Every structure is written in structure tokens, then in C-alpha cells.
Image 1 (spheres, each protein chain N blue to C red):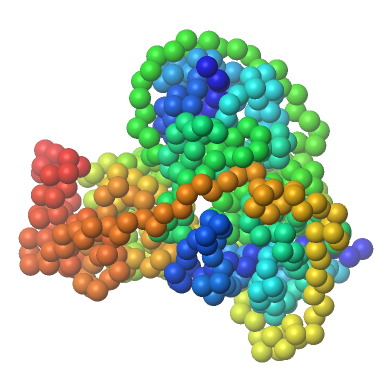
Image 2: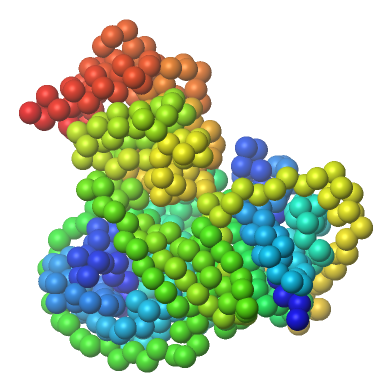
Amino acid sequence: MSLRIVVCVKYVPDATGDRHFAEDLTVDRDDVDGLLSELDEYAVEQALQIKEAADDAEITVLTVGPEDASDALRKALSMGADKGVHVEDDDLHGTDALGTSLVLAKAIEKTGYDLVVCGMASTDGSMGVLPALLAERLNVPQVTQLSAVSVENGVVKGRRDGDTASEQLEASLPAVVSVTDQSGEARYPSFKGIMAAKKKPVETLDLEDLEIEADEVGLEGAWTKVEDAAERPARTAGTVVKDEGEGGKQLAEYLAGQKFI
Amino acid sequence: MAEVLVYVDHVDGAVRKPTLELLTLARRIGEPVAVHLGAGADTAAPVLAEHGAVKVLTADAPEFTEYLVAPKVDALQAAYEAVSPAAVLLPSSVEGKEIAARLAVRIGSGIITDAVDLEAGDEGPVATQSVFAASFTTKSRVSKGTPVITVKPNSAAPEAAPAAGTVEQLAVTVADSSKGTKIVSRTPRESTGRPELTEAAIVVSGGRGVNGAENFPLIEALADSLGAAVGASRAAVDAGWYPHTNQVGQTGKSVSPQLYIAAGISGAIQHRAGMQTSKTIVAINKDAEAPIFDLVDYGVVGDLFDVVPALTEEVKSRKG
């Protein structure tokens, strides 16, 4: 029986661009180029490796976002995913993490799945809660923050490296997995992969397809409200000295003055 | 006065500092009720009381260590139902955030993560967050349900505020559906004797300029002279010079110490994302044009192989 893998990916504003907020205090997506969140590339990579090790598997890559978010899907498809699902709806503007997890969970259930693979966090919001939110909503095991992962005979195994211990985890499918940037370097799409991606099917879904009411998502339906977003004042220029033999001593002097020594 | 649930992060009853910070912040919103899961509640309770816990709810079950996260969510949900709190606060650790997320879904509440400050507001607690590599500061609140908020370490100085700290057993039933992810084995990390990176008051980090694993002892020696944790940039970690668990940055750990010393780190945006909220920033770098110098309170343009050992010696002699 075919192993159905769904990889959740996010289209994020490029961190090297000038990221800021729009008037409604949502992230301004018009001014900064977007791309597939780097941490999600690791999720795509692990899904590809799981597929390669399986007899029969299919990878669907799933995103929720505006029209441009299809770029993130294309990148994942050019890496080797089989098909895409893009949830796009004007009423999704301003949706927060809980709302996004609701939309993703419905889309995953509609697509059908045995394994959901996510990155450890997005590179923009960087909350790192989505995999746990999804596991709770789908009522399946969460096998998260893995630096190594494998699937065999309907069981997912992985290593979770924490601050104080390294744990070996195990769960029966279906399950939600998240992988860290230690899980393995993501492959670059080949020219052939890029050409093939153009022909791969991408299904577009809206809220109606997922039977979600507009007031459950979006800015109005959000469970959290941003009341203020202020650009951090530039740090006042600090003292910079050139080391001419006394640099270490001068620095010690400064640290002592600040009572760190 | 409204009660506020505080999830206790501890190792066999030894309460970790971020929890004491949470108790301090919780008192701005209401009366802290601590939730201690697992062994060691007897050890933890007096410490929690000393820092303001009016009550300590405890539960211990083998499921907390046999399965990942979900059984602890069952327990925290039981505490939530017993108390009806005004807010639930957890530390912004990997596990803290995962527990918070699942609890939020169950109780139909919004979640805010990585708060760096918390204050009472007319419509509930207001959380300050630092976003976009700390280039923006936002203020947010939960608008549906009971606020579930995770707070980053070093967001407040723990204050003593002795309270009753009455210990009460919490009745917890772990659902079968919470036993999905088995923890097959656990290998404790070897202790370095240094403070934990995300909690440390001082962090000394090395980057590309350290130029090899064999030179990291220089960074460690400076850290040890200051009682600091050791961090590393992604370049140093990817080169295999230092363990990933010490990586500071967007894909590593986010730190917010009183003092951050960057040695041989140029300061790419990905690194800045993980350290820009540090209170005082110091850099040592050969390249006077390195972007890290835009952030510093004090910078030394120089060779770290000269400056770092000299600084270490000076710190040691001053500390006598």
C-alpha cells in the first residue's frame, strides 16, 4: 500500500530583505521577495529520503498563502515532490498560528495522509508550534524536532536532540513529524527537476472546499491580536577601538565598568 | 485576585531559573499557581513558594517520561480545569512551546510564544515580542480564550515574594491517545559544567574567525573566566568545530543574555536573529567592516588570537 506523505511548507519573506509590517499590523509581503522557508527544505529532503526508502510512496507538498506562495510549492516540486496543494483565499489574510493549523489540518485530511512532515519552525514567525498544533488537531502522535528520521513497516522512528538529553522516539503511523536543520542537507533541484516541476499537478483549494467559515480565520478570526509594532530604534553607536596591543585590556576595562567582572 | 498557572521547568525538583522569572511576571497579572509534573515536588515547592506561588499543584505519573509531550498536556489541562486561570504561562523551551500549543487547541485559546516581557492590560495580559531578527518590537494579546503565553529566558529578574505555596495533588488521567509517541531511550547530555546556553547571563560565542575546532578552547577559557556559556555561529557549527546544540542564530538557539561576546563572528542576519536582544553586545573581529560592529556597545578591531587570551588573563587577574 502506498505511503502518503504530506509536507507542509511556508512561503516567507526573505530575511535578508527589509522586512516590516503593513498598516493592519500583518507582515508586509509586497515589499520583500518571498521564498520557501529554509527550514522547510529540510522537511522536503527528509520526505524524499523516506520515499526513496519505501516501496511505494507519494509526496504531496502543501502550503497556505497568497498567490505567490506557489513559488514555494514549485521549489519543493523541483526538488522531487510529486504534487502540490495550495490553499489560497482572500479571507485568509492575517490568519494566526491557530488558524493556520486549522486550515492545514483540514487540507491534510482532505488530501489523505499517513505521514505529515514539517520543518522545526518557519524562518519568519519562528514560533515552532505548528507541528504540535497539527498533531493535536489531527489527533495523531507528534514525533517532533528530529535530527534523524526513518519510516519502516508503518512505524516512524527518530532522534530528538534536546538541551539535556537525546531521545529515541517511536510512533505508529499516521503521525506528524518535524525535522531540524541537523536532519541532513537539502538537495538542490536539478535542471531536469525544475523542468519536470512545471508539469506536476497543483490543486488549489479555498475555504469553501475545506468547509471552513471565513470568521474562523483571517485577521478578524485570529486568536491573537497584534496591538503595536514598532521598529526597534537603531542601537546608538558603540565604542569601537583598534587593537594595538591593548585591545584585550581595554575590553576588560569596559566590562569592569559595566560590572561584568 | 485571578490565578495564573505557571508551568514548572525542573530537573527532578531542581527548578530552573526561567520558571522563577515566570513566577515574577505572573505576579503582575495575578496570583501564581505553579504546576509541577514529575518527581521532586517536595524539593521544588519551597522554592516556588519563596518566589510567589500561592499554590503548587503536583502530579507524577510514569507516562510523563515514557511518552512525548502529550501526557503533560493532559496534566496541564487538568490544572486548567481545576483553577480556571486568567492566563497560563510556560517557558519558551522546545517542550514548553509544544505543550502550550496543544493546550491552546484543547481549551480553544490563542497562543503567544517567545514573549520578552509581560504586563497586565485592560483586555488581558500584553506580551512584548521581538521579531524579524529583533528589528521590530511588537505588543500582542490573546483575543480568544484564556491567554497561553510562553516567555523567553532572561525576560525578568527573579524576585523573592514569599507566598503560601500550599502543595495539592492534581488528579491526572492520561488519555490513551496521549500515548502515541513512545520515548524508547534517553541519553543524558554530558554536562560541561557551564550554564545552559539559553539561560546564561553571559554568552561567549565563536565563529568562522576561530578557524578550527582546535582553537575553540580559547573561547571556552574566556567563557569560564566569566562564568559564561559558550555559543557558536552556524559557520563554526557547519564546519564541525563545535556542537550544534551550541549554535546561536535563526536555525539554532535564540539567546538574550546580559552580555554577549562575539569573537570572530561577522554578524550575518541569521546570527543576529539569535542574539540581537542581548542587553550588552561586545565583538572582537579583524574586519573593521564586519556588520556585527553596527550592533555593538563595545568592539575591538583586532585578531581574536591576541585579544581573547589577553582578555581572559585580565578577567582572571581582576577576579583574583
